Length: 62
Length: 405
Image (cartoon, rainbow over all chains, first blue to last red; front, side, top):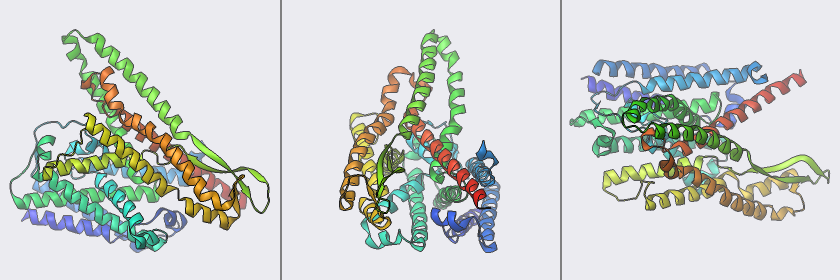
């Protein structure tokens, strides 16, 4: 059972990264630092949240 | 210490350190179902390229190397596919190419993890791999998302921190291994004492310190050299002294070495996986020739991608600037010719650094495990200079604001 949880969490984690659009340097410098929507922040937090879930799952399997 | 007082610089430096810490912590999260029975040689090129994570067998063991491989592929495809080239010129297009690069990262991470699990690379690394297919699939997913996460962390450094994320991660990997290597060398002392060859040990250490300082200084100087071509303005019609068009001697920095190493690593996976016989060992003559040729090829590819003569000529035309004593229509030819000569000069320097491993073996005992000192130091210095350059730029940018207040 746990192995499927690991695979699903892994895929979820990959998806959480893909739904965030990569920012290019020039745009990052121009507006990236001054403007950041709440939704974007939420997506970043979501990625770290899934990573923690993944770590817990790995710990349980170990 | 103006930079320390600048808020943005402080914020960016702290952010970079935070991400690096997160990355280091991540490397200690062990992979499930897998065991290792021996300490892997940290002197592997793949280890250097992953950011020093390979031998920890954690979820981030593939490190940043799949991302680098994918950035080579996407960079080359941009030259080959016209629609991608057009995309690389717009903001939306760049975002699209960034996503494509992530897909490629995942793809290469899957290939590498498959290689580790299904070929004898795993055995070389000293891993006991489970026989169950489901467990292998889970491991492949975990390793690949680990690599994706590392590249994501790299992107965040590029965006919010200082320096280019991928090279900062590699540089930090090299830096974090220095204490371990010093410890290893100290541990070797009793061995030399028992065989009455303490002299050899001391000589090795003296040469090592000299070599380290010498190489550090040399790569620092080489990284600083740039050729300046004076510019003249059409509007003012006189030479503006402060205006130069600069081309750095190492315009491509250490990227050709990183790319050549990444290509060899990929070839190594193919060797182990499909049974190819590409001579990837740079310690052999054929392997070294291949490595050197790859460095030359990538130097040219990278330099010509970075400095585009045709684009420069257009930009110069639009802004009414031209190079001193040179008609505007000749700018493209002039830049391309200069770039060719500069690349021809810089490639041998990169080759010297890359092939130092072979020369070093004659002076420093092999047990010291410092075969990659040349490449490592060049990468480290390159990354350090990049960070210093950006910090200086940010400090200036933020202090200019005060003028307008």
